Length: 208
Image (tube, rainbow, N blue to C red; front, side):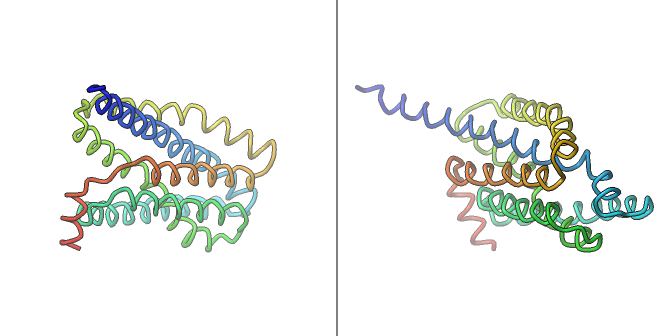
């Protein structure tokens, strides 16, 4: 009877840790479904010229860096990484939906890439929250991060061939909607199973 709190705590920890592993895999899958086929999508579906494809990748890199830096600073100040990850997953869903149905080059470049950059940032924010979780629960942070990176690596082994299979076997719409589903599942799991450091969040609110 005296061991029941410890058992309950261990189960809760295992559930949260498992959720981190699944989210790491799914955020990796969401990215791996989109990136490898992007040049083919732009050429075949959007009918972009080679120079425009190159400009699209350049613009994506610049916008991605700006969004990533903005969110990194905001998460450090606000403290609530959980809500930020859910928000990023939501914008990732919107980005995938836009790419699934829209074929206007400039809309995809300025709106789609902007939204996608937020979706991509869910992964590094998840790693930051995982480190906080490992520190709080006494787990070895380096080892836990290594397990998470292994999940992302696995996703990038499975994702590209799956992306080509979906795009060529069905359509790019199906491929992007599959990535949207991955973001939805990630957002739900983060909301239900991830925890927030109350002290850090309250400190972030005071700074915000």
